[in-house]
Length: 492
Image 1: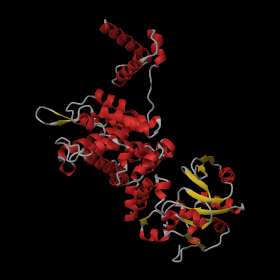
Image 2: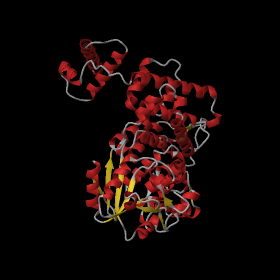
Image 3: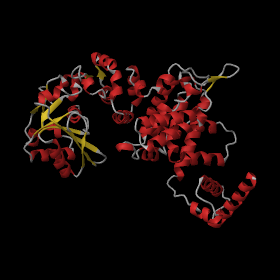
Image 4: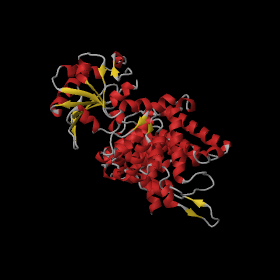
């Protein structure tokens, strides 16, 4: 972009094949179309463009379906006051094209948008014709906002029209490293209660986007300053001001924020902390989660919820010492309930609940003078696919206990143990596990019906196999028979 607010040929300097396909489609149609929103903003900032927004003067559904067919993407209509069509395309990942109906002329449309830096447009037909330079349409001061690195609402009505913009303003400020303009910050704070009017699904998606940021802790801190985060998760209010024992230098809430900050730093410096396992850890964390996000999202959410059970389990012993007995178990129940309220997937509820329930276990094991192989195998079995996340959460949590006051010997021991377990876990994770028998084999051999006892038997067989006591199907069935007979005797 030049000083006159025009786009030249450099707008296409970074080839984006998906965008160029869209431009070719626009060229073949007669509708008036404008490129608006984040993609235009990011290209002006010389950032890689992501999702694409178009404003169309015409039948949005018809236009969107034809474009989806051309791109080979999936199409659906979004609900809400404004007609919006969304196309999802697999393009080295997942990208979205949102097509909305033009509200009056383009200048009127821009005045109805969220933030000035997003209220910019160019005539996509001119782009399609290759006419350059092309004037950027800016009626709200968006170009000035980009230059000054400031986020400002387009109007005082912007947040009333869509309160989700409160969360979006914070996320954009962290993502772009922009400041929120003071008047806008005040308006965000004044409008905090409006967030209660937003559906759980939309809040969830915005939180997912926030957790996807490398500095997600800064966004959560800002949402806390705006008094928004406890409106979304009221349980957080209980954590504030709750003093802890001598192993902690912060109250429960500030300890939690520090743990999330530590996790952000660990993920950023993964290669330095886990030089040999970094690739496998990233491969695991990048596995798909709900809605096109990866497993970093539930890991960060669990970090934010890991001590949610402390306020409800706090007690003092006879000497006045503070304890939080069973807070992981109580916290896991609360965390699952919060996840369900936010319409998080069943997988997400399971992952977050498991991480909260298991987050203290690593610390206990690391202090064992004579840790048995059996105890370690049970830990790995119980954590299962989430072992990587449990270890990363434990490290983040441990760094946040006494912070700079942590005794080096204790901290080093914990870190050494985590690295040792991480290495052991990842060294065998790729190897397929040989199951000697199935549940059906046990039911047939012992004449049992399906139930929890079959699962218990399979776990005991797996333990015996790991200890080298059995190695064949016949030995596994004999082991099961003896175990079952002993179980019956004990019940008598």
